[in-house]
Image 1: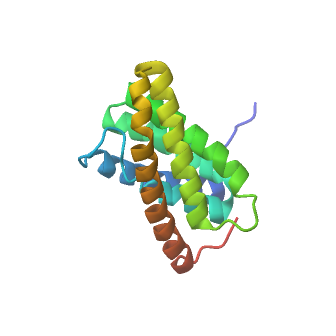
Image 2: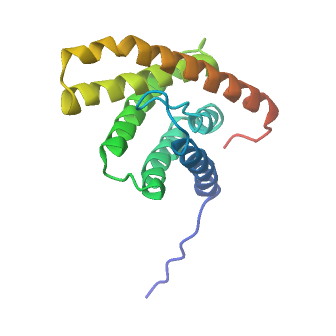
Length: 171
């Protein structure tokens, strides 16, 4: 009979630490009032962007997935429409980041804007197809995408500042 020792690798601990930080930011943001339904600053995405730039796309995917699932469990929104929208936005944003981060001339601010616009587009698509399939929804899209652009710029700038100041060796 063999005994299997389970232990966390340094990468596991890094992902857990980053995800914990992203979840904490997510929970704080969920308590803030929103001017429009579904419009939040998305500051937890700063952690995902830092993970992407320092440790790669797979680490960013883990951090984002854990933030969405555990954050929804903590806030009591697991399997609600909000959870579905958050998950859909995260999947589309991560797919866009998977392509964009391979482009040599795109910086962290550009990545943040790409992710924010993709996230909003993914959420809008799910809302339109699943919840409110009304042509009037299209009138909201410019406002929603403008908010995503603004918050993407803000998150990207914060990420750029933190990436310059945080000294962490890559994996």
